[in-house]
Length: 136
Picture 1 (tube, rainbow, N blue to C red):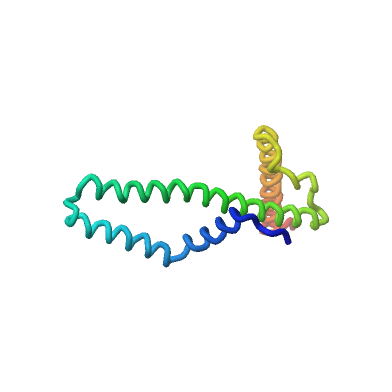
Picture 2: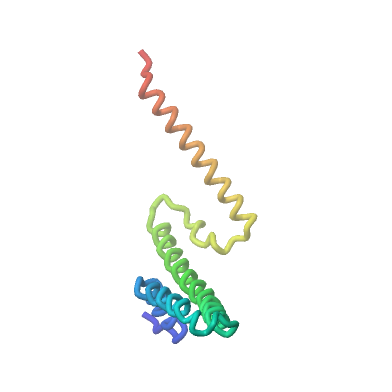
């Protein structure tokens, strides 16, 4: 297995840590400490700037962390789905690279599968009706 670069490694560790209850607890603690110190600093502009700056920086960095995690997870899921499609005898290998199609082509594929699903439902309803009302 290939070694992860420093960014991927850092992003993976950070996403695991930020997803834990302890990280959320730490964030709540920071807000509580900030609120409690409000009267000590007279609810000054500087006091407000501290939390605004801190949360803005954290939010900015979290956007990239979340995007990295989502990209990695999506790619892993896509590889797993590709393997399932590849190993299923009745599957269409043409579906292996759907994520590379443009939106118009994806819409055509979706409409095709919606039509297949509609037909399957109708076929299932007809079969169910025949089972409930057998001919005598």
